[in-house]
Image (cartoon, rainbow, N blue to C red; front, side, top):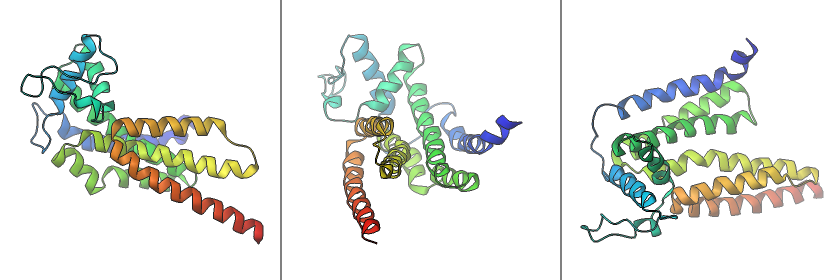
Amino acid sequence: MDYVKKYWGAAVVFLLSLIILIPLFHAGSFPVHDDTQASRVFEMAQSLKDGMFPVRWVKDLGFGYGYPIFNFYSPLPYYIGALFVLIGINALLSAKIVMAIAVVVAGLGMYWFIKTFFDEFSAVAAGVIYLFFPYFAVNIFVRGAVDEFFAYALLPLIFLGFFKIHYESQSKKLPLRWVLATAFFFALVALAHNLTAFMVGIMLIFFFIFSLLFQKREKWL
């Protein structure tokens, strides 16, 4: 009973995320703007089979001449998808699994972030709203921007880490575990979608500036 009472909010967010996942796992693919996701997953797996790591070049794209796509394009979702290909799952289903992972991480990540500072109902509401935010659906079902919505799925974890650092550092002790965790999450976002990392980095700079000014204001008062 205590287990159910403690995790009911996370279970609700997870179950509601399944509503988004159901259309993903219909037979075959579905039309999106960037419909090359399965081929990228497949090419990543082939490069890993050839012993290349980190993967920078794929041999079959570029009209068969090869293409350095992962030298500049976000590789993280395709590394994850390639792992499923390497264990025998086809590339299309592996690409869908990557999308499903992003959906689940997005909802539970936002739930965890809000629950850290507010009550259970607020956390559930935030997780569900984030899952069903229109732009998130557009990225999945219209644009097919796997890398971008994978990065967005990780954003709540970055902000959780920075807020933890901010509040715990006020006790004059730097929370090293949260510094390392936040750096790790930010690195994942950069690997998932470097443009998102660039934009979030600017936001975090301003966040630190305002947090420092707020701390000084409290001391002056």
